[in-house]
Amino acid sequence: MRISFVLGLFFTIVSCSHPYLSVRSDYFSRKDLASYHLDTPDPRKNQAIYGQRIYISWYLPSKEFSEGTTFLEIQVPLKNGKILSEKKPLERRFGRYNYPIQGDVYTESGGLLSYLVQITNDGKVIAESRHKFYREPIKSQES
Image (tube, rainbow, N blue to C red):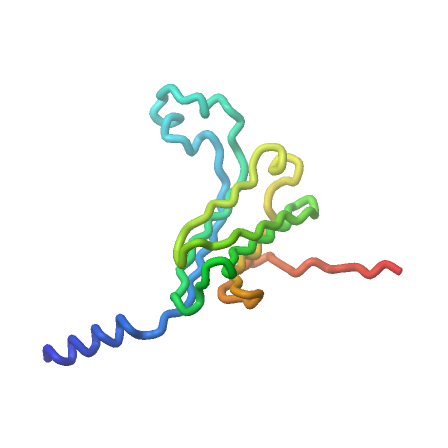
């Protein structure tokens, strides 16, 4: 009994793990501040804080990660047709990142339409998460 437990624990610890990428989006405003609900002084309550944000968290196995060549790539098509892009080098195998769309960008664009988040290493996609409405942009050929 004890040996089977130890063997089970051993195989659980040393077994191969897969890259993990979790992405979600939500709206935010000054009503999300604790000071708004508690009615305490806060200079941020008087600012026009509103928009959308994308929460990203990841975990990579050590064999998939190499510092300097592993990147977090974000593409965000907006409702007005523009596309925001960011490529961020990853310094650790695990972490979190918050990508905000706020202020004038949010007001002028109407917010995010969808997103594509990828973790790449040497140009190869390791993990990917896409919004259910995400579609690759159509590229036109002009003559």
